[in-house]
Structure formats: C-alpha cells, structure tokens
Amino acid sequence: MQLDSGLFRYEHDFVSGADSQQNNIVRQAGAAFALGEYLLYSKDPVAREAIDRARSAFERHSVAWKEGKLLAWNGKQDQAKAGATALAILATLFSAADEQALQSDGQLRGWVKGILALQQPNGGFSSKPGSKMQSAYSNGEIWLALAVLVDRSGDAVDPVLSGALEQADNRFLAFYTDQPDIGFFHWGMMAAANRFWSTRDPRFSRFIAEQTRLFLEQLRPNTSSKSNSCYSVEGLLAGLEVLHAEKGYEGLSGQVGLRVDEEMQKNLRLQILPGQKNIRFSKLRYLKAPELERYSGAFLNGKYRPQIRIDATQHCLSAMLKDKARSAKSTPAPKTH
Image 1 (cartoon, rainbow, N blue to C red):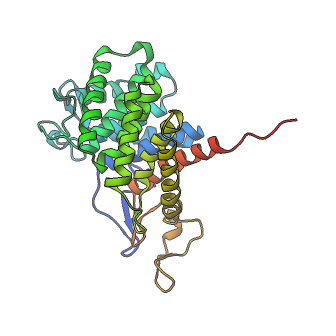
Image 2 (cartoon, rainbow, N blue to C red):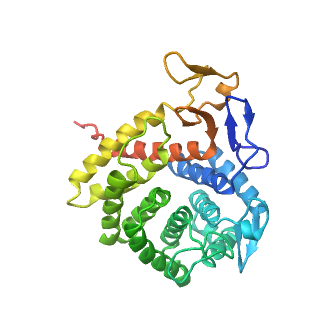
C-alpha cells in the first residue's frame, strides 16, 4: 500500500491491528525495485506512476556523499544505506521510458556516483559512508545494480563504471564461493545471471552452479514449512535459467526445479486472498482480523507470523514473476495446421 508520501506502508500486525512504528529505507527501495520488475512484465502505467512517486520520496531521503548521493532514512550521512541506493537505481533503470531518459537523469547519476564512492580497493563496497564494513546484502544489491546499469548503457558505458563492475565481478566470484552467505545469495544469483547473459562468460555460470549447490547442501538444505522463502526462490530461479542454457547441469537443474516447486507451493499459501476473513494456523486455530481484506495480495511474514511487511511481499512478487516466466518457457507452443 503506497502512502501519500510516496513511500509504502512498512508493516502491519493483524494481532494488534496496528502499523509498525519502525521503518527501513532499504526495504522501501526494495518495494520500488519489485514494482520495476512488475512494470517490465506488465507495462502497467500504474506501476510506473508508483515508482515515480517513490523516487520523489527517495530524493527527499537522500544525503550528499562525495560527489554523489545516498539514501538515508533519517537524513544523516553516517546512516546512509548503500543497498537502498542500489535498489533505487534498479527501480529507476526498470522504469525509464527510454535510454535517452536514463542519460539525462540527474537523480540516477547522483546515486551512481554515491555508490561508486563506496567501492573499496578489493572490489567490494562499504555498507555506509565512513565504514570499512561490507554487507553481504548490499554487496549483492550493488553488484546487480551495476550489472544492469552497464548492460543498459551499451556502447556508451562509462569506463569508470565498467571498471568498477569488473572489480566487483572478480571480488564476489571469489569471496562468496569461499564464504557463501544467505544474505548475498539471491541478489548475487540475479547479478551473476545478468552478467552471464550479457557476456556469456562461463565464470558466471560456474559461479551460479556452485552457489546453487552451496544453497542446497549448506545454506538451506531443507524447506522450512513455517517461513516465507520467496527471497531464496528469486535467486534459485534466476540461476535456473542459466543452468538450463549451459550443458552439464541437467541433474542440478532438476533438483532446483523440484525445490522451487516445493517452496512456492508453501509460499503461495501465505498470500492474503480477496474475500479472506481469517488467517488459519491449523484446523482449530485461526486469527480473525476485520481489516484483512484491505491487504489482499500481500504476503504474510511466515506461517505463524500474522504480520505483513513490504519486503516479504516484494520478494514474493519477484519470485512469482520469475516462476511465471519459467512456466511460460516450459509450456509447448500450440500446434498450427
């Protein structure tokens, strides 16, 4: 639900009937990112308008950093978030009317300069100004943003930008193979898939295969019946498309397909449906909330977590779009006579 400010209702609790007093600029930008993905799929002008309003809100929540800008919830530079800025960049890229609009977008240039000013000598990125700490989440989000940005720039790509992406490629391919992280997984898989389709470099398909194995064997070896796992499905499906395109991964692809089906069957039960009157926990236990129908379409945070938060729905929207694309590719074309 988008508010008059252009931001989104952050979280609602169906037990208390109240909205959360907390907020998170990264998750706000993530909601705009998912709307951008939906816009690419649907061409729905309502989604474009929502992203434009969100971008105006993000501008009000941006602070100066070096020669650029970064998103910060409270207006303080030391609390600016690299990951939020990367997601705002992605929303902008997905919603741009054309390439000329991107080239003349001063807001986009400011955010990109802010991100590039956070890159460390090893190729990773500080999670915020003045910090040497890197975040698995923001590293993945930034990698994806840079990959899409370079891809969209074509022959006009800035050599500074392409150099930053090459540094990030080298860092993340090595580091997250040695130290896999669930916070990086879904963003990193989407970024690596984008890089594969842009370059056809087998380094990226090998990385995707290894990350997939690490996910299935170490990070999340079992499906949790209680959790909302749409974030994981985003990464699995982005990688699965690459595995299908490369030879030698048939067995791994089959495992991923089964796991995605299992995860999404569970995740879809967390969606609030039109006309739904209660949230059922078991045959004998349920929660009745009079405002439930207002939030139809949103996803619960988990089976026993009767709250909705924007990132849960963001990840599920993204996962559903990717799963829909998978189904479309696997459906045989109708025969013609």
